[in-house]
Amino acid sequence: MIAPKIVFEGTSFLVLEKPPGWVVNRAETTRGIQTIQDWIEEKLKIKNLKLKIPSDFIRRSGVVHRLDKETSGLLLIAKTPEAFENLQEQFKERRVEKRYLALVHGRVQPDSGEINAAISRSPFNRKKFGVFLGGREAVTKYKILGYYDTRRLGKFSLVELEPKTGRTHQIRVHLKYIGHPVVGDDFYAGRKTAGLDRKWCGRQFLHASYLAFFHPETGEKLEFTSPLPTDLEAVMKKL
Image (cartoon, rainbow, N blue to C red; front, side, top):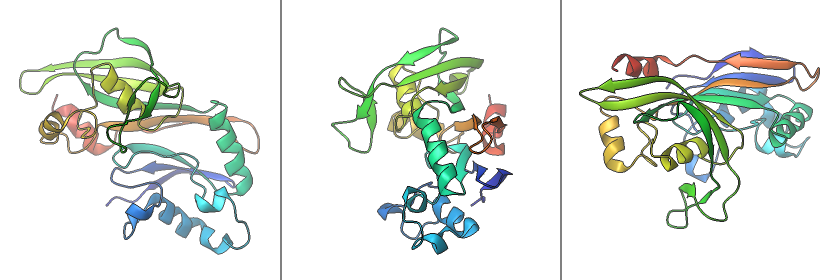
């Protein structure tokens, strides 16, 4: 499995490019599997601090937010408890900007807009989320980067998405809700559709391509970008 790549490292935080296939947070279900959290602990020697600073920073090994296992792209890690608290506050106050690239089924129209639909855990499957009455506010802005119409595979849209809230599976749920699920998404595209997708796209086509936040020490706005990785670039060439 490809190792995470450090895009930037400062005194109080670092920005990673997470490869697909890596689980971010350690859990009971990840025993025997190396997670991003394990990788970070080893790099930053956070385990050595466990008895000195019992905090969320230690419990999460500085991981400020998360990406799904199959989602690649930019991930923000705090190196100090102070930076962790500051960056988490920025997420809570919605001062962090995130953008994703997704290839989805069909021709999304209009070519830009906003999806505003509340999300909650599915009462039918506790592992899934969906748009349900009584859910939490969820807003995603989107912009079409390109349309693709192939005789063999069908019609697709390459979409740039900017979630304004941070609900679990938000982008995937919202795209399913408007009838344009992510290519290869075995949770929300449907088993048959995802199975056919996986014959030419080896994983869920979702990539965290842009991240902007304020430096936890200086307050300066920082921006990071990540191009499509080689596996997703290869998928685009098939279209």
